[in-house]
Image 1 (cartoon, rainbow, N blue to C red):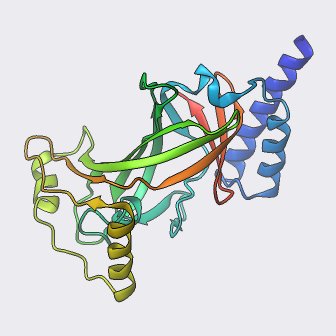
Image 2: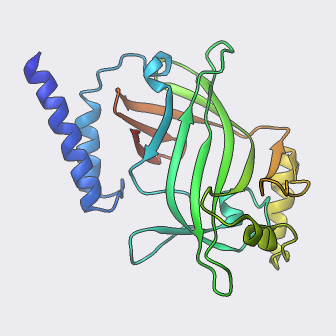
Length: 249
């Protein structure tokens, strides 16, 4: 038993070290190898039915892997506001750098359902814009499809200023933003998303909090395989093979 625990601790330590070495890139062969080695030691049987899933906070320690991102020289990733939030907030082409990605998973008390919110903290890095800090939260829920796979649905999202952000500056930029000049492809995608997911656009800013929100009438669904789960780490693989490593805060 002692040897097993020591092997597990060593495998987790080695994975964290190699993630730091390769800037969180789960596509690197060295990282893949360490993930495979750790997953073979998974101590949690039927992880999608385990209370270990629940956490007030999971923190992504592998690289953000949203499509259409740009890796910056400092190792961080830049995206547009539209890409992070289904094109629901203007200006959609506003360039942001991701500071961190968090995920609270909380039991909802409805059978086997949990929240599956993806909380992205960002800083605006667009020229001619203030250095704003905010949070995009894509709201969702999840439930077991089988012992190792979660069904995931997204239901809407919010855009809010971070706690350290000056609210008046935030409101000047986002309360009545100039719409981005969308190309034909972007316009087509926006129409497609609204039709497919029943997107209900944000109806304006709450001037007391700076929050804006949107909802989805037809939730997009996906599946997430839980490769590893214990009291400290969670490793998952999505529909398109994307592997994410999260650490419990």
